[in-house]
Length: 356
Image (cartoon, rainbow, N blue to C red; front, side, top):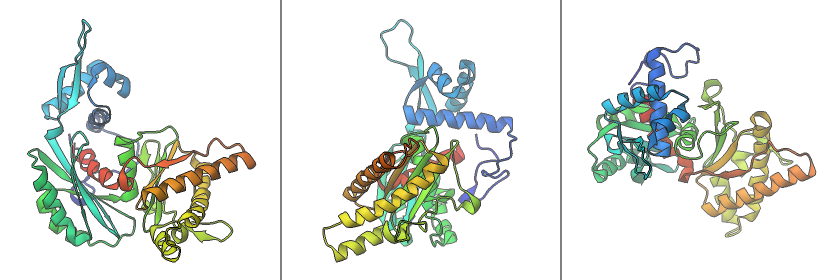
């Protein structure tokens, strides 16, 4: 099911680039798209019948039969009678979770983590490491601990835009162990985790804000991650707002929180108030332009600090709506579905979408 539109080793394009937006699409691409979408539905919702897949995909049941036959021949799905007391028992299809596996790596200034995922999206093993030099040991550890026998499809590696990384050194180290490598921005990985395993596609799109050493955002518009010019969309950390004109990277990051707590131990409230005020200005700007269906936030801050920021953002939103204008296009900000914004999870999903 691999076509010329998929990425090859280390994310280098082969044939037509995945970012090529020209409207033409071949019959093979259509078939692959339908197969990948069906796999995604089974991963997200669990076992589904032909009728249910037909409703989700908008295809006829005979077309669904063809897709399921193709996936079954590839060893990726199986069919069985759905348990029921009704006279008619439909066949439901489910993923063969042990048919394939992938690895995902989140790499940042504070180190990172690697996870192993099965075809059904279950995290089998995960391990943290302190720097790029620890990646290989972490990968070898979780592969050995998982004890899997299915095919390893490759490894997704997610990192922040501009993160200094010797890709060639990583490729030389890992390709022999894990196969194809797929590099992507951590914001896109977080978006993919939410779209495929988290809150799903939302009408109006989705924004996820990542807060750690910097502040940045991923955008899902029209069912696709929006990358912008040279992939620089979502670099909101240098956005200045408020009467003090401070940037988000100055007042709403993990280093700024640590600096505040060093001067005021055990008293994060003042920092939360400033960070939330500036983040709210960013939420207003994004909402005014694209009116997303959901805005999520996650990253490296402590859980209680994130909860305090979200509560403060909710009050800021209510005050804005009450005092200035009725603005239903300002969504409430919620926590991301996964720890650390699901970056490693989204990275692990990439080999499935690029190779199956």
